[in-house]
Length: 297
Image (tube, rainbow, N blue to C red; front, side):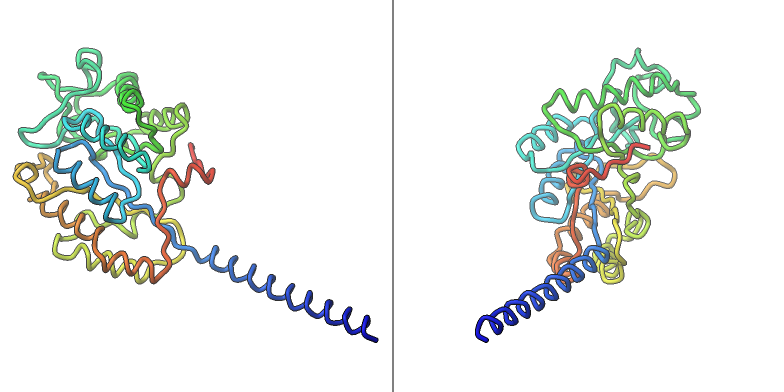
């Protein structure tokens, strides 16, 4: 009788344990299916010293998860050094064929006589997409310059996780988009925006500086399960950034107000608390690569 009772007790225990494990598995599956993942990507690292300071603050004190380097820009070397000092940062190459600021220009990485269709008479990148296209840029020159930008980042000891593009010039024609895809395949890099992310939900670029934090909080409260991308442009309120003036006709006025407001928003304790309360997982392009979530076409 005792042995029989023990066997029944053991069977009952295993049965209850099995039910518990099953329910636990189901719960984890539901959580996985209901997961909200958010990539917070910063653009224009290397543009100014203030931008580099802002990126470091946003990576270390905020929710920034990935940052794109403007390789041709004047403060790239400082940005590259910071990235080497912080190998845990997920960084990308912010492929660039424009220099859009008044009195603050930059040239290609290659000698400009090797890519003459990409530059004006002084060897500078054009400030707008329309000016770039009007000069009839050659696809082979676009590829040479973009490749040189990736190689420059690699030569500085960086290990980029992804590519993305500065402004809209490289999005205007299929042959330019194909060059970006070709380079992504060749260098085994992700293309930001082509990894299944929803970018529009968290589009805060033109939201007024006074409302950026509020809008982010509202969106975090209502976001549904999925993978999202929020693009920000970290900057600080400094004399250097106050001097920045966008030459694009639809460019934001007083750019420094927008960029410094984005830094305040993504370092805000309220934003970080809401992310934790809603169990929203911050992720990066490095994590997507590690997980094998690669999309090259």
